[in-house]
Image (cartoon, rainbow, N blue to C red; front, side, top):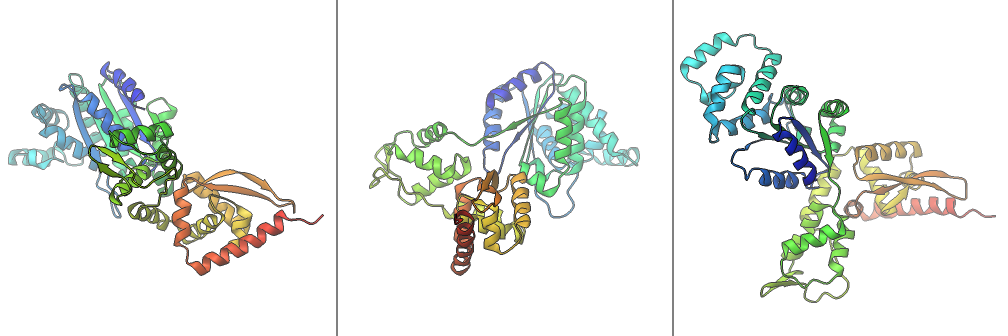
Amino acid sequence: MLARLHAAWAQTRQGGRQVCFVIGEAGIGKTAVVEAFVAQVTTDPGVWLARGQCVEHYGTREAYLPVLEALGQLVRAPGGTRLVGLLRQQAPTWLVQLPWLLTEADRQQFQHELQGTTRERMLRELAEVVETLTAETPLVLVLEDLHWSDYATLDLLALLARRRAPARLLVLGTYRPVDVIVSGHPLRTVLHDLQQHGHSQALLLEPLTAGEVDAYLHGRFVQHQFPATLVRALYQWTEGHPLFMRTVVEALVRQGTVVQIGEAWAMPGEGAAVALDVPDSLRHLLEQQFEQLSATEQQVLEAASVAGSEGTVAAMAAALDTAESTVEDVCAMLARRGQFLALSGEVHWPDGTQTACYRFLHSLYYDVIYHRIPLGRRQRLHQRMGVREEGGVWCPG
């Protein structure tokens, strides 16, 4: 991942503007990757860095919010007076968005000059300022959580990516695909168009490997005497999800399962087996994700958790006493979003039933969901599911 970002940066330094999107689910490490890359390239004092954070809103989003945050950082940085001068000359529509930079004379002058300003003018002005600014100094512009971006920011992002003039500009955007799909955010359409025409590239973060989990433990606990089974247990339990893994590891420290003895870390009393549990903080996070779903989606996932890490649509439908088509539609929708479930194939039972099979993306998901179900309801779901599976699998000859 870092190698691809550095390759894009090399092209940026030569005047070829680059737009890269680091994408993945919540907690997969998008920000960590961006932070690591930024730390490496900004060792050069001749590099401009600006960041903008998109924020989740429940009302009207402020236009250009992350871009204005980034501009505010640049004008306050060493050499920022040059940018202020460029804004005054080439982009007055943006200068007035930073009112602390205006004198009273400026306000009176711009009040008349900028009447009837269009969005197209604002977009063009900032694009030209960026090209002028980066002719001398390369710029890294980081825009985080674009799945919450306002639409005006998307227009600007698309324009910056499509312009043909040379610019030593690297835009790094992060977003969560699930949030884009669920909300119907236009970011999905914009990114598809940019990638289709070669104006951007998407960098998808994958879960950690067992070797990377081992490397994390060596970095977190420089000297340790952990049993070899700890890496395997962590990897299997969290399936390489960085946030899940870090949360479980820190819970082991808080609980005293992992302790520091002198200068080394160890797991006193642990033999070959390592028992892991879902920390309260992680359980709360997963429950929040679950509670954002519709009632029907929650019910289907409860039935899926009763089936275990993997289950059939036929068994889930029987447990819920509902139509298989309804359950399959919900499972398919969740899988398309990349939420909780993934399609794992089809199953053919001896009684002639042909049913789709879905698995949980992480074992932690079904563990948390299963233990949310009240005991009485859980028993009823088990009973109905067991009857259906027995009738389908056992077929008298």
